[in-house]
Image (cartoon, rainbow, N blue to C red):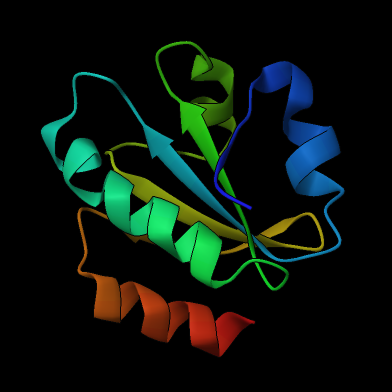
Length: 106
């Protein structure tokens, strides 16, 4: 399926009301580590298609979402299930660590 870019306006409809668990990638264009993990996040969105929805939030254009979810450092990967945040990973983690966490949650 691929990642879905969400905004303040679309976040509730796409993420909070999602049937599947959601991995939300909080990122910014100027963030080097965000760019490093972007291909991994995109690949995960394809590998887990039908089991996990992957959404991306640009913190520069959606600062209210960053504030709402207490994002202090990026990249931050927030897992949301049934509308509720359940876990967050901060920093550019490796693919294996991310997949292990996803497998625990889905």
